[in-house]
Image (cartoon, rainbow, N blue to C red; front, top):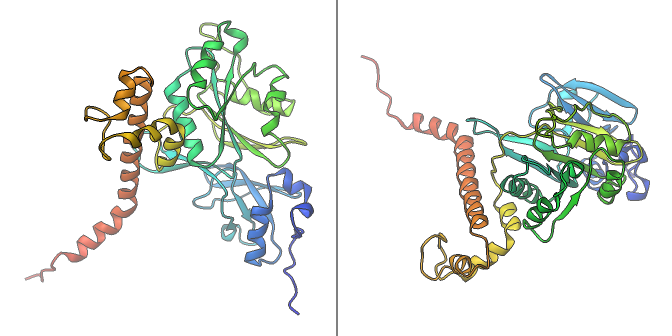
Length: 354
């Protein structure tokens, strides 16, 4: 009878998963991959930070740097090859947050992998932007993750309910929390999504309180923060790179830098789920290819005229669809452009030199 692989982790079902690994976010999804791969002496580690030339990984009694590996991001699981780390096996992800890279570069940027919940953080001041929140929600839905909107700095804004009301218009299926990130009570509000073995991420602009929330969850100064500016009650930029933090007897937390630009790509499903009501309504349009601008029999325009839906929200929806299609097409062109160019070069007739 063939012997079972001699793995360093006990592969005997959910109840037998090592508690230390579970605290890092390990579960049956990854355990079953190890079983199917039949790799001897498997050493599961999770990427907590990505540096220029190396990765920081953690596992059972292991916290070290290894050489860089292509196409990984914070939150990825590896089966570490101690003798040749670059040959480590990247386990299949259960979720992936991504966007189009900022600036003119058309590359796809990986934000974080293997998450369970995304806390989309905004403050109750001039930083609040409904269109930006919708973008974060669409990106989160595209990754098949649970979005939770967290509105901070209610202690500095007496009329914070107006921000709660606006955020609640995005979707009836999304929980909107209002809290003071520095108050210990914030931990209670976040607790339902922060159980043992869960991985959460804080997304949002700089200075909205993402690092402060992570510290409140941890119960200590896990991440350095800076004081709020007195001039406009806005926070200062603190986090400069994505990092996974392990909270004692709790979940794992990924703190992210503020995103100056959030361009969606490959997010058609996420946009559809964010604007589910408009997506269902467009099915009643007379023309299947209706642009929802001027065509006769447009259900969207009819509902705008009747005051049943908000025209500004419709315009944001159409803008996101157009942007996603454009970016997705650009990235597809970029990925295939090299091969197409080479084929064209080979197809040119070759002339012999005289």
